[in-house]
Image (cartoon, rainbow, N blue to C red; front, top):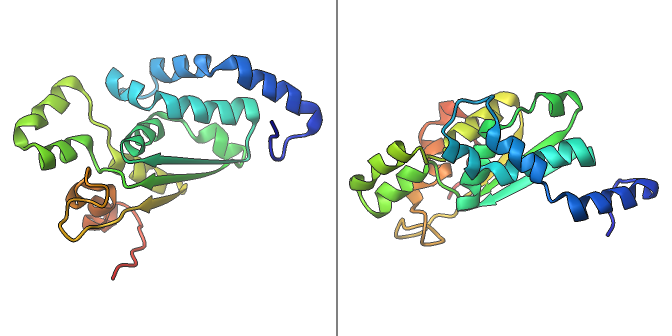
Length: 187
């Protein structure tokens, strides 16, 4: 195993850490974080991404961190963004890039588009509302780069046939361009 940009003398240590660490202490921190008053379900949604960011920042001491969330993974990444404190990483000049690929604006928006309004209260009652829009706005306010990839379809049912075009993150951000600066190059 080779870690780009890591001195060969440190490589064995990093390799050993990856083999036995299993990110458990970071997962525990991410799921028990009290810095953000969000419902436990949303904290656990983003726990894997959060653990990964903390591991890369603290253990690997990465200078660049790129994360990509595809479809539902974009929602999980969004929850990690909302719960993560980027202050220390930004002070260390860590360069972040987040890529949301064919993701949704809010999980309830997708459910309503697919099933109907009857399901919307379920998300509020259970506290399961991953919010890609709020995450994109937070990144924009922090000056952290992000790429939002969205394909549209002729029928409006999404290029992946899961997330309808009108429930996508890109659609919502373009609908309200004052929330975030998103360059748009459409046909």
